[in-house]
Image (cartoon, rainbow, N blue to C red):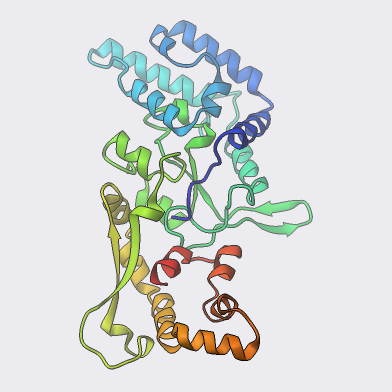
Length: 314
């Protein structure tokens, strides 16, 4: 919920080109892809090169995924051929974490690319929940470790062709990726996936999901002093309701409601009239004093968790 993962336009073209250049065995992958396509004519509807598939935008990947799901699989012969195709694709060409004899996986190369581009891709907090830090960290002069998972928004097991595609990766925390999403789709329909995947050009969670604090029972003044009187409410519209449910946003944010209640206490303590008065006394602008108190720019500029929650509360 911190925005889209990838840039658009020329910036995306440059990023994709740099990503592809990391694959030193690209010529071998292209040769294997060519041979597999020549052997299995049903694959003729897919792009000619691995490089294209690796560089496709998410909208284009949706079309590839949809075409793959429509490959004939009614008869036993068709099912058997599809099984052979899937095995060859996963072990010889689009081998993210599976490989056949004599072939290598590419998971390490891809993770290394994301570590290298951590600032360009804003790899700081989880793109799904914004409540866990996923930034890489340095353990030695020449060694950097990852705290992030790379989730495939479109499942690589359902369509091996998207296993190495840059626009299919979502940097996320292990809770969102391994414990909650797992192998579940982001949405029951591909149209829905196109909207709720942070790696998609159409991702719009920041406008479609809103946090608020609801009062459960009547309490005396003081939000933090009476935290049991309040609960976090997530208002999500359309397909984003199932997104919020998939990642248990309301339940998980409830544990951290102190972040919101503290801001509400500060808002009550420092209304704009008080802020203007403090600004006059300190020879500052009202915006400067507001930042000193609430620290919203600090939170955003320093990639703090819960930035979306704080902005909604304010």
